[in-house]
Length: 169
Image 1 (cartoon, rainbow, N blue to C red):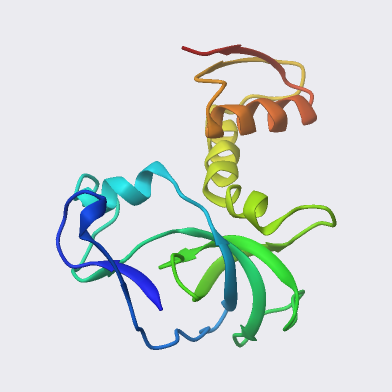
Image 2: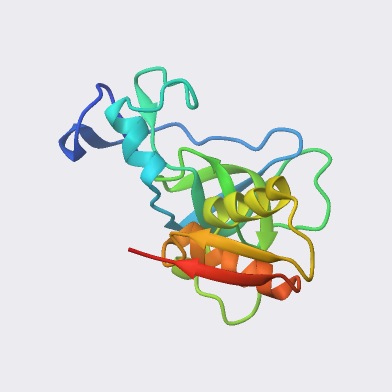
């Protein structure tokens, strides 16, 4: 099963359907999904708002982030095995099975629900810090520090020795 939409719109366009199992290609893993992350980009794509950044062919699946148990490993994948609990990014993650293109093994004590909320948020935070070029000892102003990406930027920056000032509405 997976969640799809066949037309752009609000939540009412979402449908739970029977689907063929996806399979891991080279450099990918497939997981039995235990939790899927819900991000603003998911509903923006569903509404047709970000077609330039996320070209969408209908019908389309939903979701980029998930956590689960690896049940298939693609060619060339190292450092993860069938049965490992992982979280990461992929596509069509609102499903029983999803293929991830980027992942990490879950640390002890992290729940699937918590882990599913990290991938896109943390990747965005890391990219922002990198693109800003801020270095240890410098100060970073984070607008929107109470949101998902903002709170991740704060934590990563502090861990890297960057002073932070956060604003929030």
